[in-house]
Image (tube, rainbow, N blue to C red; front, side, top):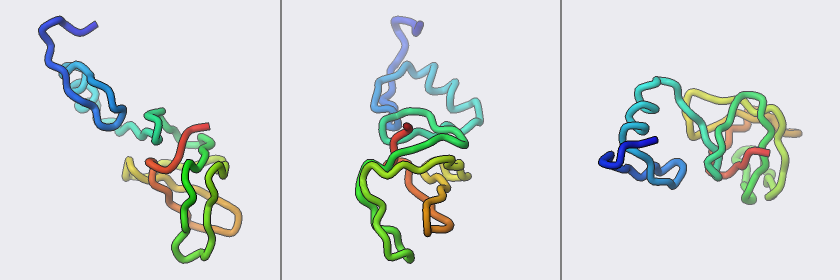
Length: 101
C-alpha cells in the first residue's frame, strides 16, 4: 500500500491515478508492458478481438469489428503487435484497436 503522503501520477496507459513510487518502480524494471485498449496486459500467443473496423493498407480488405485473431506476437514497439489473418501476411495492428479475448 502506498504511503499517505505519496504523490500520484496519472497513468495514461491504464487511465488510473497511481502512486509515484509504483510508477517509478515499474519504469525502472526495464521490461516493457504491452496493453490493449482496455488496459489488459498482452503476451505472445494471446487471442485478440478487433474493436473497430480497420482498413488494411495494401491488402484491399477491411477487418471488421469483432474479428478474432489468434496467436498474436509482440514487437519491439509496445504500441504495435504482429498478427496473422487469412489472406493478409505481415499484418501489424496498433494495440489501441484490439482487446484481449
